[in-house]
Length: 302
Figure (cartoon, rainbow, N blue to C red):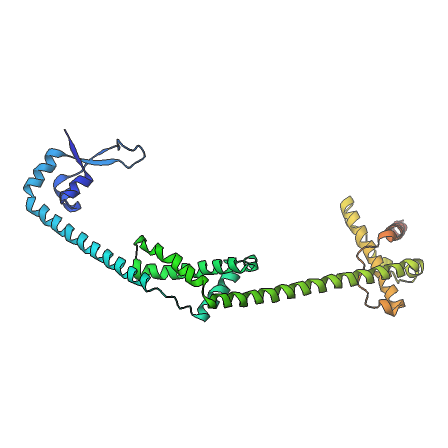
């Protein structure tokens, strides 16, 4: 026995309420045309035809209402299209200077338009025009086209108008100047930092050479406090190495402080991080102090 699908039944004038009331639940079957499609809802033809005959007047009223709704919808769509056509024929775009500058600023700061874009005027204007055109396109779609796809015709017109706008070009030049100033400042800052690092390095090198020339004397008179040289609390090799490094750094800092006091030229010389060639001599001294401490502790116990 043949059956009607939902689409066919609605074309007869049935509403969902009438289907539920007079036809009841459908038979659900797999779609024979498309395996991935949703299952089909089917009603027995005899039942549908019987209800169509019984409810003929009600169905005709429903079809008339539906035709009226579709006609009104077509009129609204036609009016939208007509309005949009008039807009396109009389198109002119007045770009507010503040708004344009603001959009470009936002685009630049948010990365919508990158610094590299501004290396080429044509590329820049195209990018900005596209960015601004998106804003204008959205406005036109809302006011003139609604969901009608005809609005896409507006986009190239807006873009061309913006590309030829002197105001956009002026905005681009202003932004380019800002970027150039910023890059210049960054370059100058980097050069200053580079020179400062070089200056510090040269001072440290001279200071190191000065200590090297007088190392034995400075070591002898650096007021190194043996009590400041400490052993690690736990007998572990890693902690021993760490404590040894701290002790060496302490001695090295005392030597540098004494060296500064002996020469006004190095009074403000930056600290030299490690002692390099003097490390073995200082670590030998540190180990000797620690051995003496251990012997003193052992003697006190005895």
